[in-house]
Figure (tube, rainbow, N blue to C red):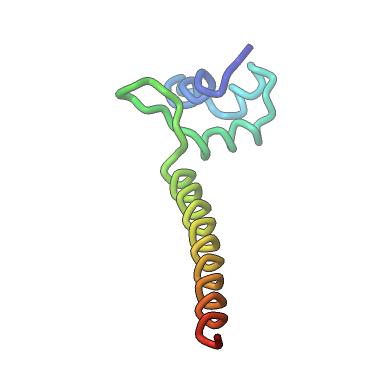
Length: 87
């Protein structure tokens, strides 16, 4: 069984083209490209990590989620203040 970490290492170190590796492993070329864009190998820990761009995308998703929660909390506070200021 081929895992993405081994494939990324092969892409980075073998000197072979993506098409050659794709044929040899029987993995679609498009999938290899997605793995190569999405992941990188941390040389210090020898682990597979999200690429810098994927890390930024993840951070952006997290921040958007946090902003949405903050907006909902703000709306609740505004409604609460409105209710208590009328009474």
